[in-house]
Image (tube, rainbow, N blue to C red; front, side, top):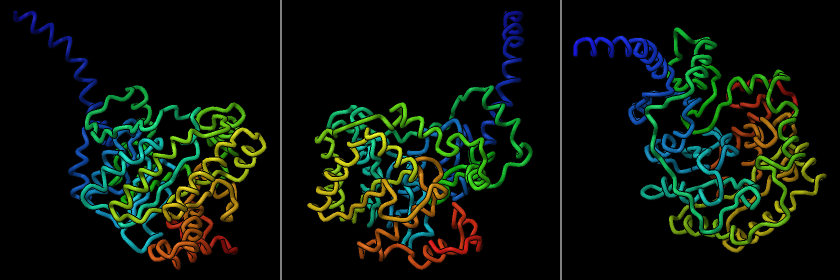
Length: 374
């Protein structure tokens, strides 16, 4: 028996010598063994950017939104993440990156509107949500939302160790940074829920040719091949519009002032989509959603192309994610047609900042580097 125990110890010892240090590193870098409930309660975070546990985003954001009880909330996919608290007069939280289709919007919304619903809701509707070649679900296929937070994750050990070894912060993790993306790349969700893309912003402004979507080559390839959200489509499934009606009626029942918009594509990307003549479903979706919103008196805006606001390719983060500059212009345009929106945005701050800086994260570098107004 004693010899058997010794063999077991000898066998397990090398494993423990490997697993324990890795476990400690996972905790130090915020990828595992993280008590997010405590971090959020104690306000001990500045940027949350987990590289291997992004599935925690919905759970983390739901806790923060319900704790802060903001009056203004933005909801949608990653394409609403550039709305920031500096753009508003009222307490704001960005609940973006929590939906993936029209059928996930209301279940996500229910998580934060049960007890203390916001007074204003800005909803981004991705165009491809209406393309059945991308979302093949049938109404009412509501997708339940899992808000469980994985406090223990098991990423690829080689990939994790590679990130650690390449880190410039091996010996000192910046205070308030949670997760490898935050620690290594300044990439993550700020306290207001918006996303700072960190090093990627710097590369964009330096015209770094190593960027994955440099000059939108990745996005344009999707358009050429008709895949990865850019699947071709002629018509929409009209039953898909019932999701939008359900969301509008939910907001009316909760006395939430709703604003709906379709997010922008880079101008050159939109031009390529139009040349291809393979995305007619977007025009049909725009027409039908506009009709529904007019019926329910909900402000609706289609920013797919640079027709409503003036923005350029250089103000985009990639082919279909606008920068803070673009989203600041979106709010200013909305305010021209909605007194409710005008009452909640910080119009003077938006205009001044747009005029004072050309930085993509315009509230982080308010320096006069652009002589032209927006």
